[in-house]
Length: 224
Length: 178
Image (cartoon, rainbow over all chains, first blue to last red; front, top):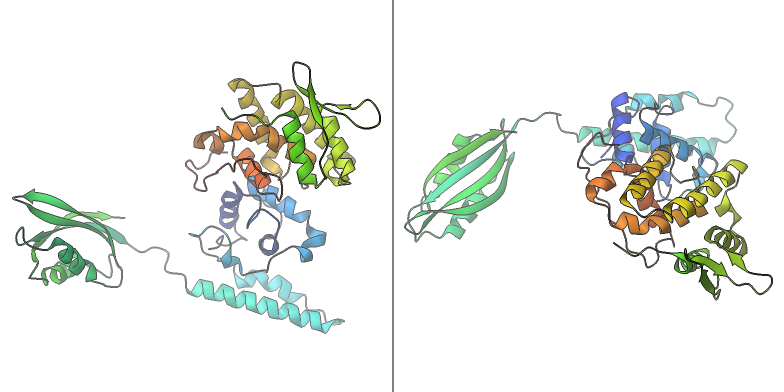
């Protein structure tokens, strides 16, 4: 989860779309979630991003009572749409970092804040680290697996096929399609990452179940 | 078409929301079924807005009528809109105009009066409930700002009560639709 880089126009657009049908980042009351995101963005969003701007102005009206709003602040990566990562860089936080009060009067609060900041940054770093490369070439493959005869146990056959596991291979839905004389073939969908799984490998592994599988064809192959 | 929350029923909902003990007797008057509240002293109160404002003061929740002069004016304006337009209009055309007006108004606001929850939100919610229940998914999306506001208000503690929860889908069908 996240909004991408909230300091960039793209990140703000994600925030804008996210807030189109919501009044708050989380739930139906202002919370620390709103404050966390509010503090992460540089200033009022531009007027054309009116959902984000409406939210910004609304949260701004809670500025005085922001400490008393419910919830616990989490890393930015914990909010927002599920399919976007948080990339609001650590460098952008340096603004807070810079204003070290040389004549600091209340040290305790300062260190408390520094600790929070460090934790926040660690969480950010973790979420960034776990991020996968942006583009992974994937294909959706439809396989036809044919049994020996009408006495082949199709359930067992499907079980065998699904037992094949590999990195970058995900099995999808399947169905039995009659071919004639009571014989059915198994049609099964799978999604593979092109770099990791090839059809040759799939064929090899599936036809290895000789007791059940007579042959296997690729019925359809689509790049995603 | 779902039955509209009208007059006495609406005021009873408001009473419960405000945490008043209840026990007020409401009647209706005239062809347009204007709600009437008989009080112990004086001639009684007539009209939705009047009675609602009276209840709010009785509950000592004056902030629901707006804090600043501007807010007070906006609350008043939307209450008037509610009584004259939402109650007055019943044709498809009227409904469309109301939703369009509200959609535009709510584009840059979280509540009708801006940043605070007021009586205008409560009564507009009760007034629009029967309309929102009947909207199609596509219409809810077309009036996205109204939908967001409505969904927000119906989740506001104590507002919805026994009224049905109107479902808003999270996945938007058409992007770029405002």
